[in-house]
Figure 1 (cartoon, rainbow, N blue to C red):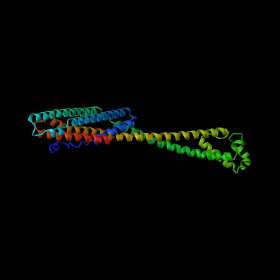
Figure 2: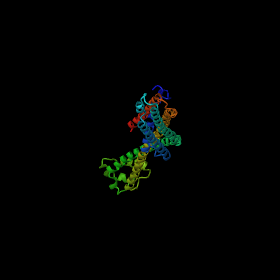
Figure 3: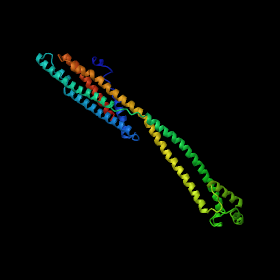
Figure 4: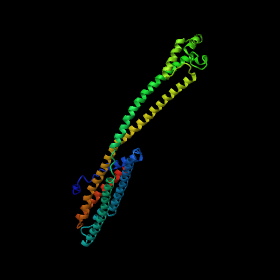
Length: 334
């Protein structure tokens, strides 16, 4: 087996796990529609995922064919069948069968090498999406959203305080029975003074009611004398509506922030997908580099004697073990 270990890159270790991880990462990103917010990027991720998965399936099919070819052309068994004391012509026939078997295995291995070249070409043909402009754009949207949210929060706080003050003032009018006492209108100062006794029954002074009316006028921004009580309440409902709309805006902004943050995170993670793709390509190239010398030796070998058959048989058995290792890692990753 020492002749096998002379192959480059530790050829008996395919390090197939990084190929599997890269394919799984792209497949998950595509299935999750992680980049659906950017149709072109989503399309690129889907193309990569399909291509990686299709070529992985092809790789496994070729591995199976090589394993089948090795098993059906049992070189080890053929070697055992040869008796050194046999007639030289009989031994030559055995060796000829072995030569044909090596040729068949070499053809299957060459098919795999072609598939590996195709896989590399297909993946590299899919352009890598440049997400830098998108990251800058979404970050800009986040920054603008933060500024708008701050302005909205400040305005909401002002309106909330105004509503609280307005409600306190209206409670004074309700306690003084202003609406029923003055026929649904807000009274003048003279009318208030004339109704001082009635107002006092509510435990309030004319000055307290005047203060409440003044506060309402300041908040609403209108003269109170002679205004219909219902109009004042309508103004209050209008202020409440504006307050509620601001609250809805803040809720929408919170959703937008969550969405934009998630999109920014996905774009940051896209760099990891690109790295995975490079690792996939490196893994496929590694397998090709590992297998090419094996193919070279198979097509160059001449089975002239039992010793030559024994040497190539060891090489083929190592190739079968290599393929089984890839197969086992693939099955474990399902």
